[in-house]
Length: 194
Image (cartoon, rainbow, N blue to C red):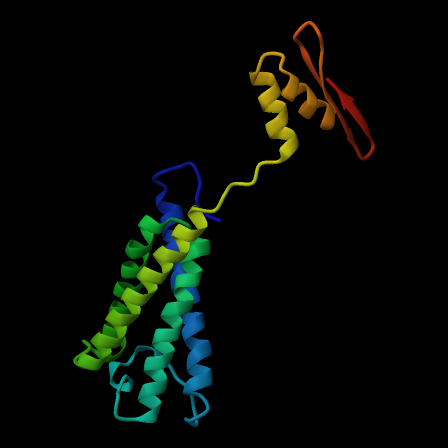
């Protein structure tokens, strides 16, 4: 989606970070609504940013921890479409969690709970590793090339050859006796010969 031929584009990187951060918090909000919202009378930003809510001794704390972990898994899926490169996944994940740490520190103070650190570092690792795996799978897919184009290019590269003529006849590429080539294509609204 965002990956192009330009190697260093700071505005693109900032846009990718902002989109990933927003999608992460959107996923976190959905999971918190499902897992925590049914157990509390009023949802607030406390469940997003206060380290005290990440507690293994309460059911609501387990809901918050599960929401953070599931948001990390969803974030790995977002990486596939926003970052598209396996080697950049760890950088974007670390940036996301550093920004999250900064927001949590402003909202509720420095996270003093070991549970908060374990949950968020586990989420970081899961998001980075799964994101890299999914991006590598996407990068390794074959690039589809239409048969007409590949046959035409093969005929242009080869000297006059029988297998090229047979393939060319199949795809309406004419090989003349003097070694020149012509392409006849039919499309909606007319035809082209060149």
